[in-house]
Length: 76
Image (tube, rainbow, N blue to C red; front, side, top):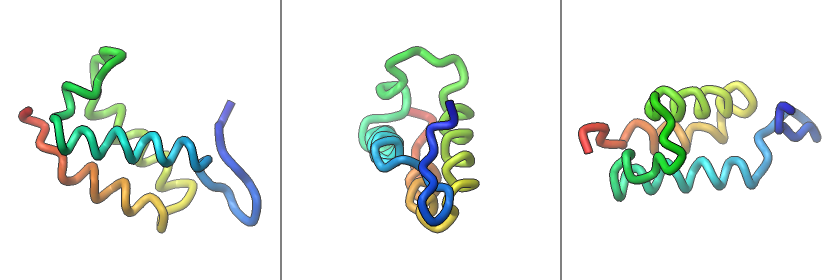
């Protein structure tokens, strides 16, 4: 399952975008380790991959996600 929406162009489903945006925001606020609830071993790379996937689907909309990702303090 690709979990994409195709209307006029391919796009990330709104709930997926909102969920990823919320995770990135909480990573900024509380630190990334606090948001890795599933214990993914490469959390940073996982989030980078999700943002890259969103960027492929809708580069303009994904800019918000990229900005959030860029402001995460990974030392926390």
